Amino acid sequence: MVFESRQDAGARLAHRLRALGVEVDLVAGLPRGGVVVAAEVAEALERPLEVLVVRKVGHPWHREFAVGALAEDGVLILDKSAIAAAPLSTAELETVIQEEKERLREYSYKFRQARNNNFAGRRVLLVDDGLATGATAEAAVYSAREKKARQIILAVPVASAPAYERLARAADQVVALVTDRDFAAVGQYYKRFDPTSDAEVLALLQRQYADYGPAT
Image (cartoon, rainbow, N blue to C red):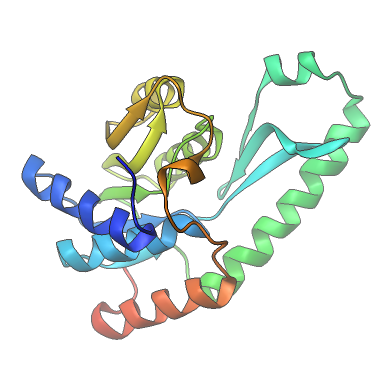
């Protein structure tokens, strides 16, 4: 299965969720691309759209090589096997973690303008545009648990098989339109997979807030 765009993926994902009878109180997208998918899902399900900020922790020598992930509420996941494969000093790792924590704070404020997520007692649907390793999505699940969500469902258009299995252990339910053991990259499942800008995320959130107000 190949999606035309994130919007197309979101529409198809919403159709699957309705067919499965999934009931949630709000939809939270993972920035940036996940918010585009989540916006389509939220509109189709007629639920408020929120954002839950996550950040990849990259290896200090090669930032694209993930060694962990951060999320709101102080959640930090480190991949010990990835760190062992490319050893680094504790000081080097801590420098990267502190940099990403600051970026996480900046994005949390930018996208929510000091509003807090109110997940307590609610059924929360987390949405991303795809799962490669699943590290950032797993961090998002743990963050939603810290926010006292009653139920956490993760929905994605595509996932690698190991990431799906990883998230199935963390979330209450995982829905993926495509699960691929030969997965190479999320972008291979999209005809258009351009980077999503901060401005696009803000516009989607503001449009949803105009329709539903913040999920308070």
